[in-house]
Image 1 (cartoon, rainbow, N blue to C red):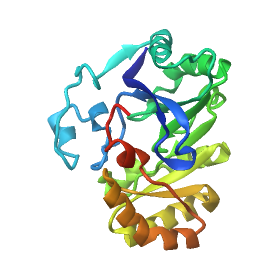
Image 2: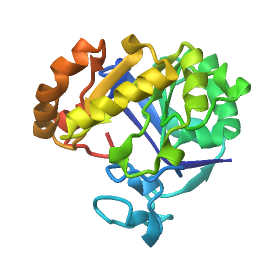
Image 3: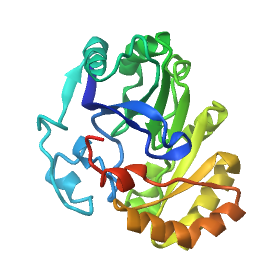
Image 4: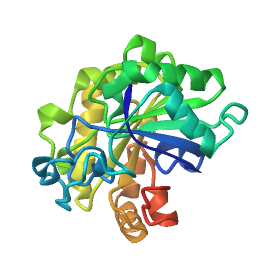
Length: 250
């Protein structure tokens, strides 16, 4: 059984190298990090202690009907996806997000096997703190890795796992996306250290403004885009902030 928060779509991939492409989302429940700016905190901020780690301080109910914890097997998730899209005949991207889906690799394998059998691309969104298992890795089309930095509020020993990042890098299917705040110079300096320490290929690195509204995205991007381009990095926006005001159902 998998721990699931949401199954939703069709929508567009909002971030990273596949931004703008048609997809469906399977959002897993639970996370091993506690990012203060997390836009899916409903998947983990279910205690007062965890809620206090977020900017909003909001505590979510674990059994909340829309976004709360649901124990589902592969068949149940596939049934939900069928309601949303003709998954047996119209291949698309299935984004497995979270939370942190890499916490449930073995549980996800049966689902991924069926999706790949129907011709779907499987994209995994991860913070890059957990290395892929062989039986999971062989079913993944692309890893969208978003390493967390000091601005996330997580201690470095929890958020920076060089061995996991190296394993993802060596898969040759990983893109690395870093969230940049208004303190963009400090953030880019930290990105530089991670890129150097883990030998990440700059052409596989993208930077993305932090912020849940379009104006903040544009303002931060305009400040840091030239410095990013000089490093060979790409730029990603949070597409959903422009299209749907960060509606969690889109």
